[in-house]
View 1 (spheres, one colour):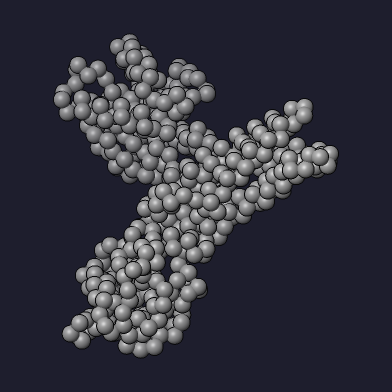
View 2 (cartoon, rainbow, N blue to C red; view 1 turned 120 degrees about the vertical axis):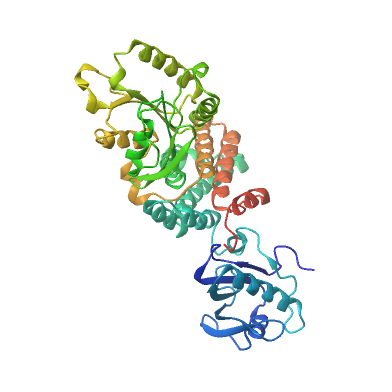
Length: 470
């Protein structure tokens, strides 16, 4: 009985829906005899063969291009058979069923052929050393990329740019660990390898490299995940107009009637290649004066504020002389400060500058801006603030790679351990035992990035996020 990891797998590798071409992919060991029998001819490796796949009664099911990739020169590192047929969901489902039935028949047995789990083809590529874990994650990032810059970043990770930097750090840490262990293992020789090799200087250089790589990873994570931008404020402040101005289309209904927006509206845009998930919310005001539907809308608005990466608090400049409005705004400001996370950037956006003389309404320069959603005045400055608030650095664009939160967190742990190691070196004499342990922990975290050392639960979590057939 084959194990789950050794059993051959099959899946439709193209998205659900109709299309000109659909792909059915099979991966497993010793597929050649099965592939030849299924296609009724001998398949030459890496050659396209136009064949008919027949059903159990011998009737034509679909005419396909069959490509056979023998191990280890395939995507998964196993034998792979790809059938490129017509892209209708019914015909593709019938192809899968026929392939599975044919495997179970006596014509060309293929023991244990089963449907693939999400990401299982790429997982096998990782397990068969066709790519490391960071590269495998980049496959999913490339498929899910929302901007052209994100595509380029995912491609850099896919070809190993991130992994190369991690491997360099691994090698340097290993060298230092060797010196420290030599001191621990041969104390009677009275040879201070640590001092002679200037380990402190080497370690400081490593700390600087880890810091730089962590910063690049943060940029890559932002490029992959984008930012969640929540627009909040009192009714009729121009929140929906701002959403429309940012997206360049009439996404939200705009009227002079307070409470027009009753629910959450979300639209994704790109600002200099960064995905920005813009969320327009219901106007926030005294719940006692709102109807039941508006109360629900405000409750959802507060939930969005709590989950935001950046909050834009929109003001109506044309009403700043209204004492009732200003008082309500002051109360709302305090509520916003309480609801949002402490580190969530907040920008005070004074809208409708086209209706007033802005010189009469001076605003702080650090976290406030005057705009007109109607005329687009100030929108470029607003976008620049958004990028700055989440730490995006334009100079990283050309070298940025795709990264995830787990990469950022792991590198932060690496920096903690290397910082600790430097502290241990400053002791007189150096605390070599503690130094060795922190260096070991740092290297362990780096190994988790590329999968050189992994846990099954980590792999299961990562590959379960992939699409079926990849």
